[in-house]
Image (tube, rainbow, N blue to C red; front, side, top):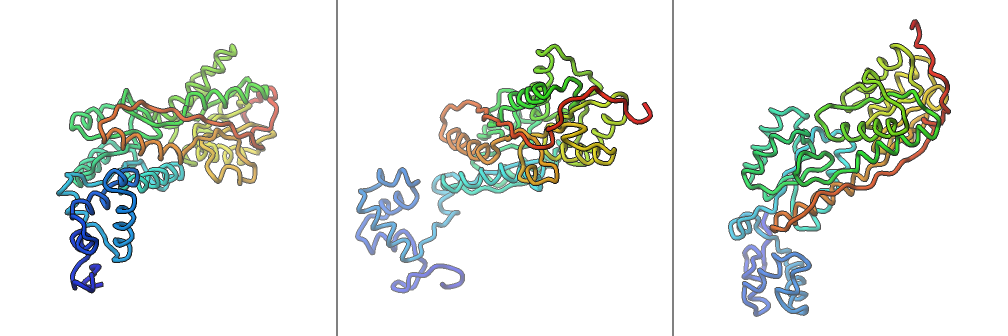
Length: 356
């Protein structure tokens, strides 16, 4: 090691493609094609024995490619920028793990930035990402109207949406509508007829589609959920608590609450507890995502499992295909209902709220 660089002691200089080519008696272009090809392309660059010789010597000498030279030669950065509302959210963090894992398998690097779901911040962070000459982008913070994404399309930068959908843009999401149906079917099977929904933010397709699947299933069963029983909230425990307090303290209490994500459902559990209600006995609560915390709560949370990690992997895989100029289609991944104690209550007749 010299001045932070790998050095070939025989030639007293950095290990380069020329170093390896000279040692093996090969043309430098052959070495370059092998070491810069993806694993499934290396056998097309040279014979199997030659590939193994090149890779073995590169490993022995500690060869490291020069990313700046590679970028200039290929006009690609092999870099993908990812935008999410906040990486502190376990759902988004799990999705990003899937993105990063798949990126490494495709020889790509990723970096992530938070937008806090604020349009002005989203725009500024997008410009920052594009300024780093990324080969593609993944958006986890799309607004359902998709207006801003039309501008990115016009700039001819390949991108994929994960978690949320918008317009006709390519996306990988959970089948959120079906997930809402699963939650509704479960509560209907339990005998619940008077229910409420904590619907999340009104600009996010996740909450929109999960709520729609839930409401439509009740409607098909001949039951209408009144508008005042569907409250929007932030995608966090405090948002869920505030919405649940309103739902449980005004008029006649619902016998069950469906929250469109687990953290809002946890907030609803806290609100019910503070009102003297026991989840699973006095009121049923169902969440969405199946975050690791859901099964470990004092009253384990019934929830709809979303394939978060797979969502990230598939998003990156679709992006690589777009970057190669291939045609791809949006994907909706299958949700799964996880029944636990929080929905154990058989529905009783709705009871008036205190003071109502």
